[in-house]
Image (tube, rainbow, N blue to C red; front, side, top):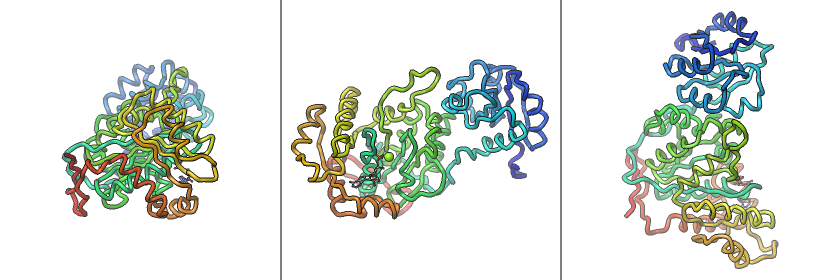
Length: 410
Ligand SMILES: Nc1ncnc2c1ncn2[C@@H]1O[C@H](COP(=O)(O)OP(=O)(O)O)[C@@H](O)[C@H]1O
Ligand SMILES: [Mg+2]
């Protein structure tokens, strides 16, 4: 039940004349839920939602016109959709937070409370992150990308952010649309999603410095993280353009390292669904520097080639290539690999990170960055760091005190 101070959850009902409507109208109010209005159709629902009085829309999953645009318009008004009936898979893709069986209206109130209290997507516990004055100049945005098969994007993003945080305040953003992994790597155990909280604020046009500070988690001096999607199906809440707003906020705090997804394919032409990979494309489009990660074995290099073609076609920022898990037993030299890479794209640098399973495992088990667990990995990632942030881009070290971190670039 809602807490005494929270009041009833305000609901808009757009049942489209479905037979479950009568029972829903009878049961919901007895469960501490206020049905503000029965909307006659989608237009009525969208119009009413703009008044900002409701937090949940209970809709028929078959409501004419219900599409991703409608769901995001509701989200912008901070109204989350619970659908009754319809195709679960399609509705989830649209961004509906809960799909309910029309035969189980008796438990609909519970679903509404879950949506209203946001238990489906838990917001971060505020205000652990500190609100700091914005950096004097916007930080650089570095996107870490790579193809399928887990080449080490997250490992690289964490390593780079950890190293960067030693000299400049840094925000690590988990923007993998296929599900966040940064929190698991770093042993951040709570089920909160900084990305979704920031996306929700951005959708509502309220993502300012204070709101963004509440979304981040401070890991240590100089390093903060915006954790990723708690479940892969929540990607739909990060609409095209929203990541831009988030990255701009992050860049006003310091340098930004973004962990992205594995695919750049445009998957948005499938009926009413949105492009899941748009988040990755948005990150790459916004990046000042792209780190392309591939793994050194044959399938890894084939995928790296594909990634390089994609990046070349997109024409994003300068690219540094990281060939991860390099080992002699594979039988090819560094020079062979550099030649292969340069056949596709002219990167800033091609750098190699050794295969060190023991160090990588120690890092995973202790929730640390690999650079804290292996000399060879630390040296290799330090080179990548220096390629991405050349020494000419000097910065002042972060101070322990509140409000005094500054990035300064000549
Ligand atoms: N250089 C390395 N040596 C050994 N293991 C590594 C190395 N880099 C990454 N790994 C391991 O590979 C796995 C996948 O890495 P991860 O960074 O999660 O990939 P991605 O983000 O691309 O899916 C993890 O278990 C990680 O510890
Ligand atoms: Mg990953």
